[in-house]
Each structure stands twice: as structure tokens, then as C-alpha cells.
Amino acid sequence: MKIGILALQGDFIEHTDIIDKLGARPVPVRQPEQLEGLDGLIIPGGESTTMLKLMHNYNLFQPIKELAHSGLPVMGTCSGMVLLAKKVFNPDMNTLSLMDIDVRRNAFGRQVDSFETGISVPLLGDKPFPAVFIRAPLIENTGPDVDIMSRLPDSKIVAARQGNILAFSFHPELSNDSRIHRYFLEIAAGFRSEDSKETIVKAAIPAD
Ligand code: GLN
Image (cartoon, rainbow, N blue to C red; front, top):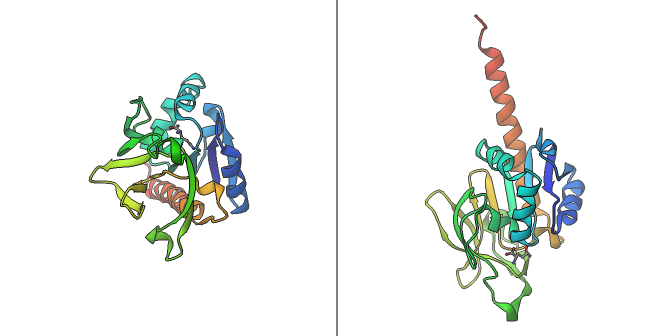
């Protein structure tokens, strides 16, 4: 299974390592051709304004958007989440707009730029997930098709899923817990089998 990691800026190496450890093939993505044949794509944390600019410069913006619309599983962490959001505050920006969420950048204020805390992600079981927040964004609103995966004790939303798109405020690649990446790989495996189902169905239709 091939998982693309957008490798323009930010902490793509950490995602690469974890995907490799889990037995899938990580593919650093810097050119549109590298998007071919992927089973999933990860947009890492870093600096969303810079990453957005580079995505345009390297002609990756539109192809990524189209692949996500066609069902490719995409996971965004921290600034990756900002880039997936339909609406961004602080300041506004023109993102990939793949998920019906409103996101506030740098939502925790300067005095608490970074922290780590165990959060509840019911989908992953009872054990809290060690979540690393670094100048993290928050989800302020979700549309009707968005499933909330995790909230902080004060009910702030920090993880969500809309179909094939996953978004996390924090950095699952910076902790020793691989459950979120495993979960993403399960979704990615489903995408490929949907694909092969389609191929099988097509093969079964008799030609004229
Ligand atoms: N504050 C950054 C942004 O808005 C995100 C920080 C991060 O990815 N750790 O892009």
C-alpha cells in the first residue's frame, strides 16, 4: 500500500517513519506525478500559509483537490488540518476546502504554544491518546456530514472525519502511539479494495 506524504515543508519525515514502521510504503510527494497510484495522502504539520504557497508553486493544489474529491483518503495534521478546512479564521485563507469545518489557527494563544495531553478518542479505544499540540488550530464548527472524533475536556473539537477526509489539531506523528496512523491505513486499504471492486464489476460487464 502506497501512502503519499506531502513533503514540501513541515514534519513530513516523522509521518514517513511511522508509515514505514507500520509496513506501508511512504512516498514523499513534491511533484504531481508522485500522486499517481496512491492509496492515501498525508498533509503534515508545519506552516499552512507557506505550505499553501508551495502547493501552488509545485502545481499540487488542484491535483490533490481532485484526488480527494474522487475518494482518495487524506489525513491532515495541524497545519494540514487548516489546509483541509472550508473556512479558516485568524486570518482567512483560500484552502483546499475539502472538509466542512471552520478552523481557527493558533487557537491556544501564545502563552500555551505547545503542550501534550492525553485525549479521549473513543473510536480508538479507552486508552487516552497522547496528543502533542504545537501552535495548534481548533475546529470551531462542523457541518452535518462531519463526525467529531475527539474533544478536549472543555469540549473544544480537536479531531474529525468527513468520509475519506480526516483532520487532527495535534501531531499524532510526534507521539509513540500509532493508533491514528493505523486507523488511516485501514481507511486507505478500503479505498483500494473499493477500486478493485469497481474493476471487477467493470470486468464482469460483457463487451458488445
Ligand atoms: N500554526 C500553524 C499554522 O497555522 C500550525 C502549526 C503546526 O502545524 N504545528 O499553520
